[in-house]
Length: 73
Image (tube, rainbow, N blue to C red; front, side):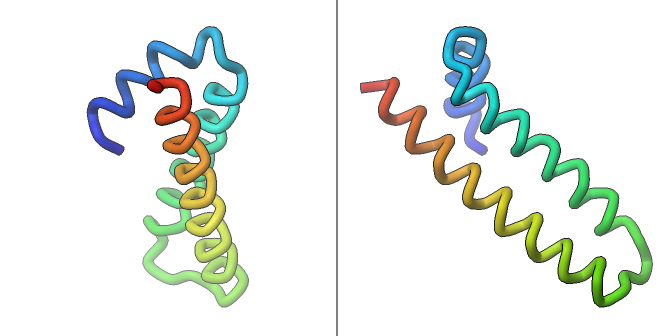
């Protein structure tokens, strides 16, 4: 994420539950992905989980950025 977006999240999350929730989910997905990607070998199930997490993270980021633009205007 860009620095401007991170600053907006920090500013808006205390008063906007939707932004706070999306950001918390984004960070959770990031931690889960880091854990999976740190493994030297992933099982097919883990690889499938990694792909799903990446998709969920991207979907959440898209929603989060849309909300940030909405609140910025």
